[in-house]
Image (cartoon, rainbow, N blue to C red; front, side, top):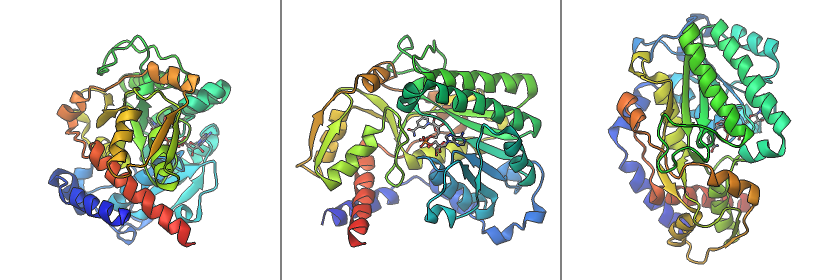
Length: 370
Ligand SMILES: NC(=O)c1ccc[n+]([C@@H]2O[C@H](COP(=O)([O-])OP(=O)(O)OC[C@H]3O[C@@H](n4cnc5c(N)ncnc54)[C@H](O)[C@@H]3O)[C@@H](O)[C@H]2O)c1
């Protein structure tokens, strides 16, 4: 019954989507057979000329990579988007399109993959996230800084368009927090944040010095149903849905009033593709904030309880993650992205809750059936 109610709500929301978001998707769906590999061009210039990129996604088995690959494959053809990671993919990912092993710390292997597959866009998702990074600074330094240098050098060497996500974690306690603007003091106190500021600055430097087509979005916390988050500070906002559906109880590691910027994964991957496709001359900056909604655990709980009134949440604050969240913005000013390349989010908190509960309930029902 819960599922039926939720699906009705989700269908209404899907029907309300603006044509701005739907039309380009339909016009760019190409089947893989339409693009034999021998016809691929060496360098992608712009979507408008009928050409298409050959895309490599690093760290593609994390929370975001598979969803981005799905959207890019619908647009550019299955065989033109390669997922890579250092882990073994689950069967459904392995069978859904090209997958390749790639450790971003192995420069020669990375170069070989780029050359052999005629890569023109590189989406760099490999990273060690905030909470995991604080537990293992050496690994975070290696993956997020040394690995990123490999990406930067290979992208410059082969004239790639390179996308690197940054984060609200790139701000710190001395940044304005409500909202954090595009340009301000950035003195983060986590190795994750420091590595992301480093990436923003190095990417922009390579853009000015060598003409590298570097593009960077500061993502808020991303919420998804299909994929598990990889050890960030905003993970509670995903875990609460699974607990709400499975047990009706949730132990939250952040204080109830901790407000952070958040976004549903569909908005995140759509923003990424739209930004990647934006003509270079519309980009006044190479690093943009994007945002959708801002809420606290208490506000999220209240919204979920409108559907599941029996949900019980207790707060057991983890001092490490609370200290990280206390240094992050409560909101992001993303007016520049809205002005320069037309960014527009679709999911507010009620739609997010409806959609997440629908997907998580469907997943739980399927799991019970097997
Ligand atoms: N998920 C979020 O809420 C969020 C928010 C802001 C920014 N971001 C950024 O988006 C990107 C993707 O995030 P995510 O949530 O999918 O991360 P994740 O932790 O879920 O996935 C990261 C992936 O990187 C892979 N990886 C680790 N070391 C590697 C190496 N040496 N070589 C190749 N791959 C390696 C891991 O196996 C993992 O699959 C990251 O750069 C992250 O900083 C994410």
